[in-house]
Image: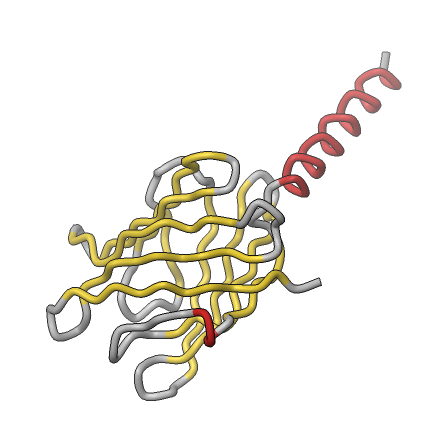
Length: 154
């Protein structure tokens, strides 16, 4: 009986790893600035990493702000539309991702109770690039639209 329970547990763990591995968003993504368009004053996320964190997904973002200063933030949660805490972001303290289809996520960020960013993240059919389209409120209160294209890293 113990053997069956252990084998079942190992099979479930392996199945979870396979599901995460099949998620096209997982991995390291580098900004392709030549294919991207940013509004003046926008933060540029140069590297974005999606990795498994138990049953959750962890998203690690490194980039530069409008003045060229390094920025770093991290989010851990599920792609279920629920807001989870963001660590390190100067513009938001909550972020929610929601799965639209197998290659597309919606993203919403809040500062307090105010939505400060919305957008979509779509991985190409071949899995080699992703496009992030966002609309955000800048520090000056003006809306800015950005399109960031990323290349998947080996």
